[in-house]
Amino acid sequence: MAADTPTNTPIDSSPVILELVDFDMRGLSEPIRYLLQYLKLDFKDTRIRFKGAGADFAENWLEQKYNHSLDFPNLPFFSDEEVKITDSLAIIRHIARKHNLAGETSKDIATIEMVEGAVNDLRWGFFVLVSAPNYSSIVEDYKLTIPARLGELNNFIKSNQYVAGSKITYVDFLVFETLDWFRELSPESFEDSAVENLKAYMSRIEAIAEIRDYRNSDEFKNRPLFSPVAHFGYSKDASFTPIIFSYRNFVAKYPIDVDEYFYSN
Ligand SMILES: N[C@@H](CCC(=O)N[C@@H](CS)C(=O)NCC(=O)O)C(=O)O
Image 1 (tube, rainbow, N blue to C red):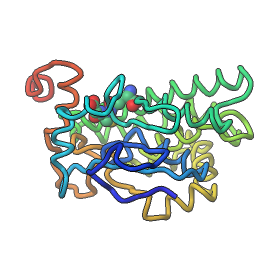
Image 2 (image 1 turned 30 degrees about the horizontal axis):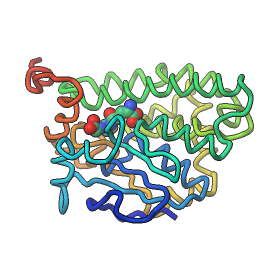
Image 3 (image 1 turned 90 degrees about the horizontal axis):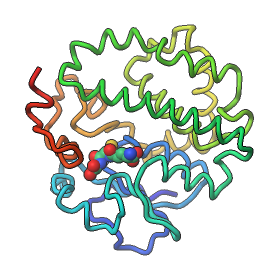
């Protein structure tokens, strides 16, 4: 099963066939990990730590991200015998297609991709919340909106076993992980009858042997959920203060003045 040792001495150095590289967090990679676990595929789970030994690798990510022969350098990236690619959705789709978990009919594929898009919007919206400078003053109001935010998904799932019916596909892992972020933030929201289908759906996914065993194992790392940029999910310690270096990723992508952008209000 997955080599779980967090390491900052990656990458390209050993003859592993499958390798997923990301910062040491659930982040965008966890649905990919669920899929790999579900498929019982051996893979190297390379995690770039934010603190402790080797954290300078994360600190220096901007300087070294161009050294990995990636067309669109970013994290996570994934390599197998065929590709070396970035973009979490491209990665999960690629693995799923190879193992017939990406939908079979064009109708199913359209449904799967629609739900993928809807859930991707939800997860990036969630990330905007947890990285907001005024997080602590808005989070309680935000929690009250969760059942409504998840309402369409709840109605869509109805009593269906999975997104595409009775057969699980990769998008179920994406949906499950995103719902788990919401549940981690606000378990009480899942007591609302407006999301009862989703609660049952989550239990169904959690009961899948490969997922249950993985989530109960040491390979599964509940924290960090996100990078230290987030006000939630990096640490369970309420006094945790996010640190600034991860903002440099955003600076690289969007040349902005960090202080002005994040702290002007
Ligand atoms: N669309 C990309 C977004 C990737 C992304 O924003 N990655 C964040 C971590 S969640 C990052 O810090 N990337 C490193 C970088 O931008 O150099 C995906 O889905 O993989």
